[in-house]
Image 1 (cartoon, rainbow, N blue to C red):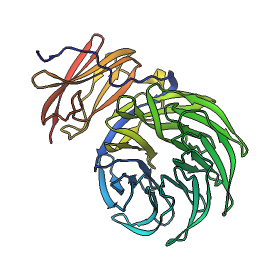
Image 2: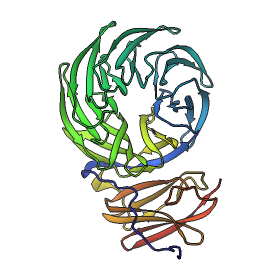
Image 3: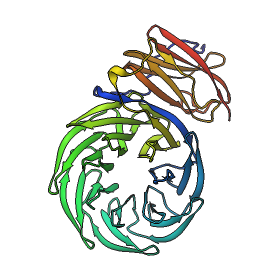
Image 4: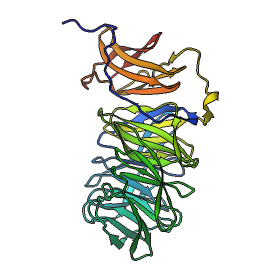
Length: 427
């Protein structure tokens, strides 16, 4: 049988379905990627831009980011699986580590363990309240509260309303919001010694993560039900908006001060990505002209002080993206013709970004060939809107097997447009 050469065979690996473009959009541009192995589950960023990664069986890592690269600056690995990380005062870092809640001090180059609590053995999500109280989501064991005096944890309260407590968030008033997987979203007050469940809603789906906007709106990453927004009046949660994405599962999210929500997700095709949607006046609209597709599974996302977006992806590590300033769709500078851009980084190992820009609604096909013209991998997208798009190629073929070092050619076909460029994989 002859190998295919420069012919397109439709293989749909990723399918983006979304409910229309909004009034404004921006581009997300790849800046950096690092993969130190293991499974990246959680990410947060300090006020000075240090990035902290809960890296599954690889423990806790910190990274410096200079705008174009991520450099590991410290690492610690205690027994367990690092799922979530949160920051306290005085350079204290809290880690939900599967079988432990851990506290570390951080001095830019190293972590020092201060204390640990061996709770129910299912520590999964952690957040810090405005008074320094540490809140822990404990899967099948519900929600716990701890005080920490710099050297010792004290468990001050616990509550279990069923479900599976995955992630927790706290607003500026100290109200606690719990993403409780198959039980939905719960809200609690805390008086220093006990919890009171003040509100509960279950919209179906699987509640994986929750984030609170500056105006008090509550956003829920709801698994294959994707994204929901709620208002909370101190007594009840009111559903106000829903954004649905076929074949995608919302795993983690964060919200910018303009109510743009960044979503780390998985797809049905064993890949992940980063999306952005904007909430305004009871409606979600598509905010980004550049849906990000990566290898690995999107698990968590955080925003740095300069607006850089950091994505934790199980199986492929940590990514950094910039976001351009929002512009009206009518003002988007799209070329008269489609454009295929040079991949970046180049040379690369093992992941590079293939970027292209569409001038108008088009079917787009991206194909990677080896130097002999044999098809290595291909993507097909139907009716993509005008704008910038990114595809992350992880150096594998269409059977997910790693390919060898060498020169590869990638080609964009969009209606009557065709262009090709070279890239170099160096292992």
